[in-house]
Image (spheres, rainbow, N blue to C red):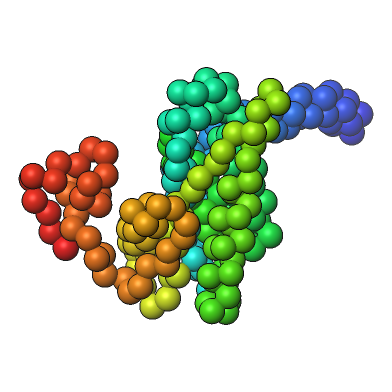
Length: 216
């Protein structure tokens, strides 16, 4: 009996050490999945979380692309651009979390989010609030940096599985429509893409070649 007690006491610190090691490892993995600049999940991590979020009634996918971001970098420098990205990430995260969703950075100045909007007639007001929030100038070294945004949204209603890639494609089209109009927000109608596809992406996006044709 004494031998068992002694062994148990001796194993205690070892087990605690392994538990601490496992906790630190999980934290490192979680941090690795988030961008050091914005603190947001990258594309893969966001996609995994978003798939679960889209099961909720009233789920909406939102894509955000900043307008005039290159001019901010060119005029004020990349440190200023980083400040804009960090501010936009914080604003988008706050907006999405209050609405039961999540946010991520897809790359560059492009972001994505999910929210739940049980009453879809309220969605325009929600997107208008997001647009106003994102476009508040960012202060950097006594300069007010302008922020512009084009926002696309797609309510996941009656969309068959798998839903995420289709929902993001439709939100991407809506964002592009808003951008062509000079910024603001736009909501996509219907699950069928309205624009052609090239190399698996909306024709006209970076990495596609419009001359190669496309399919619906």
